[in-house]
Image 1 (cartoon, rainbow, N blue to C red):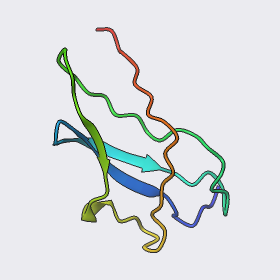
Image 2: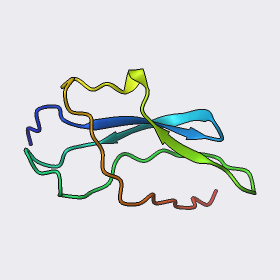
Image 3: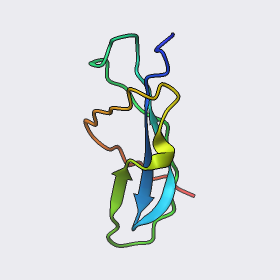
Length: 82
């Protein structure tokens, strides 16, 4: 599916430290209301409270150069048993 490289890229931080990169793809040409999931990021979190932050940094510019917008509906957190 060609979306003209219109995806949003963001940095995920956990407690103010870089935890990974999120890519929010456009799911079809001119189709900004077709919701789906980004890539997943695995984190090891100790017991207790943590602050997760999604930020835009200079390194998050995408190839398109003009469009780098994201709409976030919710954040899904899944426990992975070891």
